[in-house]
Amino acid sequence: MIYQLLQKLGQQTLEQAGVPEAALDARLLLEWACEIDRSTLLAHGDREADPAQEAKYLTAIAKRADRIPLQHLTGVQDFMGLTFEVNENVLIPRQDTEILVEEVMKDLHGGSAILDLCTGSGCILISLLKYSNECHGVGVDLSPAALEVASRNAQKLIPDRDCTFICGDLFENVTGKFDILTSNPPYIPTAIVDTLMPEVRDHEPRLALDGTADGLHFYRRILKECKSYLNKGAMIFFEIGYDQGEAVRTLMQQEGCLEVKIVKDYAGLDRVVTGVYSPKDGL
Image 1 (cartoon, rainbow, N blue to C red):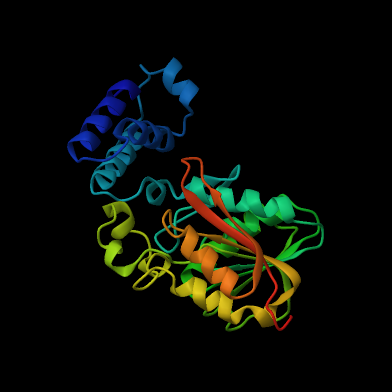
Image 2 (cartoon, helix red, strand yellow):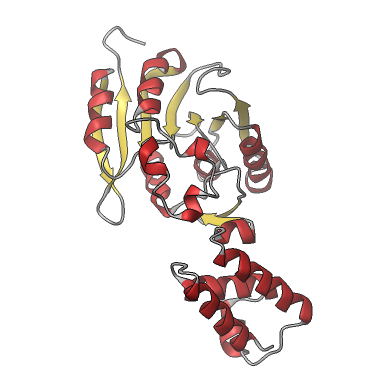
């Protein structure tokens, strides 16, 4: 079957299954399965796909119709201009999280020590190390399977950078002190998790989604436990849910953070809270 017809068949199948952005996903999966780019697809839509490519595409379309995420089928997701490996063990990096990275980079200096909690695929830490000079970092996650993905991403994207991954519950196995603390922790209230789109609810790790009853559990813990791990004047950067800005700002101020601000995403929603950690009894 020629590319054009395959794409049309794929789009129709996804539309019938109620998949959002069916046309886009059908095209992206065709490009992936046939190992072509968009220009080739546009210029040579009448080219025949070989049988193996056709079978690969139709299998992927069937899985996407079952609401398996596109990125789990292709195995990759672009983030901050880099291509990260992803699978069912990590959250799929999202454009909203690039806001956090961009905010950190405004305060990142050569030689800074970065601690990234709930690191998942490692996309935040790896991006920061990729685009900085002589910084070093530690990523922490409770999931050994997630850390395997993060380690492979680091080996591929920043083989010459000082990047370490640790398995543990937040600060459990962390040593040393840091200038920057970043985290995109689980922040979705438990009761909301089961109402999410099936791609997220059924295929992304619940461990990385569920922020307990009010979604603020991990912010509280991090702010309570971080003192021994931060240098004087260290910066904290949290990704948050769209309706959590004021609550997280209050938590940070209660724990002694100064210059706390809320940063909005491209849709105008609260997305990041930052501040300088300065507890009243000193560091």
